[in-house]
Amino acid sequence: MEKKGALLIISGPSGCGKSTLLKNVYKEIEDYYFSISTTTREPRVGEKDGVDYLFVTREEFEEDIKTGQFLEWAEVHGNYYGTSLKPIKKAINEGKLAIFDIDVQGHEIVRKKMDDKVVSVFITTPDLKELNNRLTSRGTDSQEVIDRRVENAKYEIKYFQKYDYFIVNDDLEKASKELVSIANIARVKSKLFDKEEVLSNWIN
Ligand code: ADP
Ligand code: 5GP
Image (cartoon, rainbow, N blue to C red):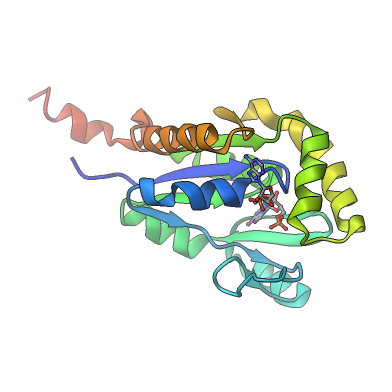
């Protein structure tokens, strides 16, 4: 049977370790496509346009909203973030696992639009104090930006049970193993398979 395209949504407070975990497990995930979001936030030191994000102005983002380019978009920490529809459709048609790192609002929207194809995981630190420590030691954001992210984390954590899976990223190796298992499970969700095609092997 043909491999079906699927969606893996990853959310969790900024600084919980989503990018670190993904980098750690990519080599173990088969045939994936990582969705590069568009954002109006300033690039961090070391981030590259077209690799980490597509960095645009607020005017450009608003134009893309108007012309229906986004599968979903949201305002997070005062900046716009969005997922372009076209590359996601392409990845699904090619039977890939499309991986998204999006916030809780984006998760709700994609769930409504493509529930049959979605598996989702909420990732977090053991507590707020550790989140603060990680944001501080990452050293990429000002104190004001860190405070805003910590504040937003208190809102985001309330949504964790809307997700299929929950990973506490304490021990990186343990969390990585859990993430690989979830990526594998996302490919065998029953609703991904065409009912007629499956039944044709059973009913004449
Ligand atoms: P996110 O992508 O969720 O914003 P990052 O991947 O940038 O978060 O991680 C934030 C910081 O936490 C980085 O400095 C990273 O090295 C560190 N980090 C990630 N996972 C762990 C872990 N399991 N234990 C300790 N530090 C971690
Ligand atoms: P950061 O600025 O730390 O890279 O990301 C901030 C937050 O925006 C994170 O919670 C991340 O998951 C979310 N985010 C990144 N890209 C998108 C996107 O395309 N859509 C939505 N809704 N959220 C996103």
